[in-house]
Length: 235
Ligand code: ADP
Ligand code: MG
Image 1 (cartoon, rainbow, N blue to C red):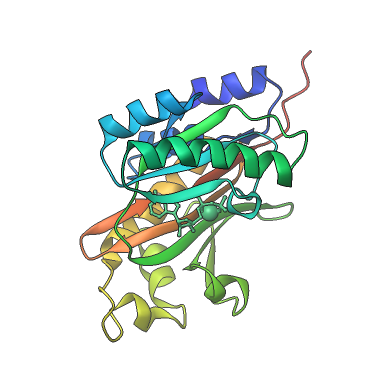
Image 2 (cartoon, rainbow, N blue to C red):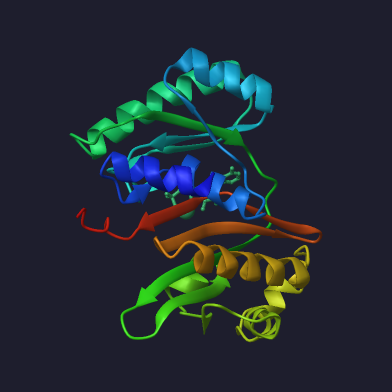
């Protein structure tokens, strides 16, 4: 499955995988996601949402767009068929205005996940040390406070145990005030699964699970982005 997705993107000369493809790869690695299905018309989006169940989420699918919400490409909490149809048209219009010329494949339809603490798992490659795994809380905790932990891939269970506990915002994970406490064990399993995935697929150059929702009883990746390394030169 993962190898086929990689081969398909390479055939099309793409390094950026779609959210649909990136989530399929995560599912293949045992990581739960709000898996997404492609719709190419408002009718198809409404039909898929009906199968998945409401509330639904729609997002633009384009190999030219990296930050979907920045260009108006994400619609959350759609409660019925009419809302899905309207959101489909709205996303296409917003994205066309924000990113003229972007090639749009259609819209990804997925389930709306229950809110929870948002965490980020990232993989990047250091030219000297190789693949690096990053973990932190979402939003300002990563972007402003840089409150993250890092390890070289492959990580050990002990690394995973430490990574989720050494960030300063750890009390938020443990259920500060009215927050639902996150399962630290599920987060450790997630980090190990991402490490194994990247070890098994060195063609994955960069991976961003942003955000992953961290619940009392498990995790759920609601957005995923993956970049492949440049294709090996053909001989
Ligand atoms: P972007 O490309 O802008 O990062 P995301 O897919 O991350 O787009 O969507 C933006 C935000 O919307 C996420 O950070 C998350 O808070 C929320 N979100 C996205 N998908 C879902 C979903 N399936 N269920 C619940 N919330 C979601
Ligand atoms: Mg995101």
